[in-house]
Image (cartoon, rainbow, N blue to C red; front, side):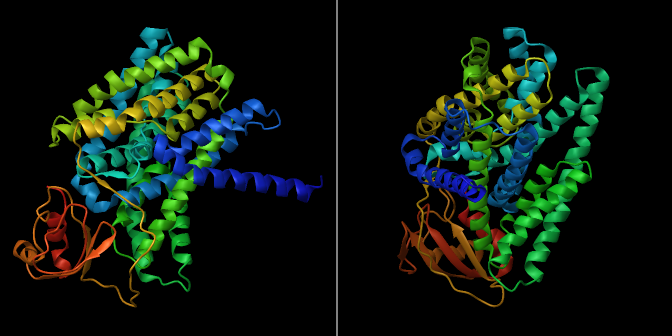
Length: 487
C-alpha cells in the first residue's frame, strides 16, 4: 500500500468513527450514557485488541486536550452568559474555588488513611478527581433541561473548577512534593493565575464583543471562525502572561454569551458543534491512553471504586453543602446540586498530567482516576434522572427544532427581545394582555408552544416553556428578564 492509500485508509477510518460517534447519540438517549464515554471505552478496547494501534505520546495528548478544552470552556461560558452568571455568581465562585479545595482535602484524606497512599500522591489524585462536568449531567438527563438557578450553578461550577483543578495540578507537579515552602509557592502561583485569567477574560471578552459588533466581515461563514480564533488567542495571551488560559476563555465566553451581535445564532450553533466535536476527540485520545489490564488490578479498581463512592455519598455532599449554606436555594435544588457532581474528561486529563510527572506508581494512580470517572458516569450518572424526578426538580423538555422562522435585518433590532417562560415565573399563567401591567408598554409579536405557533391574542395565557418574542423599549430588557425568568 502506497503512502496516499495508507493516508486515505486513516482518513476513512477516522471519519467512520466520527460518524458512528454522531449516530451513537441516538443510542445514548435511551441508555442515558454520554456518547463521549462510549468513545472512551471504544478507544480503550481498540488499543487492547489491536496491537497496531498505539497510544499517542504524552505531549501529543496534552496538546490535543488543551485545544479541545479551550473550545469546550468557551462554549460553556457562552451557554451561561453574563445575565445568568450574575444571578448565581456567588455560589459559582464558592463552589469553583472553595468547593474544589474542600473536595481535594476530603479525597486526599480518604486515599491516605484507607489505602496508605503517600500524602503527595494522594493530593495529586484528589486534585485530579475534583473537577466536575455538567455536560455529563445534561447527557444523562437527555432532552430534559434543568430550569432555575440550579442548572446555572452546575454549569458555572464546572467552568470554574476546571481551571482551578488544572492550575492546582500544574503547581503541585512543579513543586515535586509537599512542604511549607511548596504550599506557599503553589498558593501564590494559583492566586496569580486566577487573577490574570479573570483579567484577560474580562478585557478580552469586551474587546471581542466590540470586534464582533463593529467590524463587519464579507461572508457569514467568517463570523464563527473569528470567535473561534479569538478564543484560542485569549488562551495563548493568558498563558504567556502566566495566567490561567482556561479561565480566561471561560470568562470571555460568559462576556459574549447573551450579548447581542451580528450572526449570533450562527456563532452559538457553530461553537456548540465545535465543543461537541472537541469532547469526542478528547475522550477518544484519552481512551487510547487507558490500559484495561491495569484497571483489573485490585490495587487500582478497589481504591477507585471506594473513592468514587466516598465522593458521591460523603465528600461532595459535605464540601458542596458547606459552600451552599449562605445561598438562597430551594431544598430540592440544593439536594440535586449535591448529587449531580459528575466527572468527565478533565479528571482524566489531570490524571495524564500526573502520569507525565513520572512519580512513583504513576500508572496505578492514573488507573484510579479512570475508575473514579467510570463510576461517576455509569453508576452515579444513572441515578441522576431518578433523583431529579424524586426531588420534583423544575425541568423542561427541549426538543430539537429543525425549522426556523427568522428575518434578516441590516441594522441591529434593539427593541426585539426573546424569552422562555420559566416555571413559577411571574409570566406563567399571565395573559398576554396583562403582561404590560408588570413592565409597561410592550407588544408580544410571537408565541411558540410545543414547537408550534400560538395565535397572539390578549386572552391567551402563557405557560412554562413558551417562547415569546416581545417588542419593547431596550431599557425594559432587565424588567422583562425578571418577568419571564424564574422567581
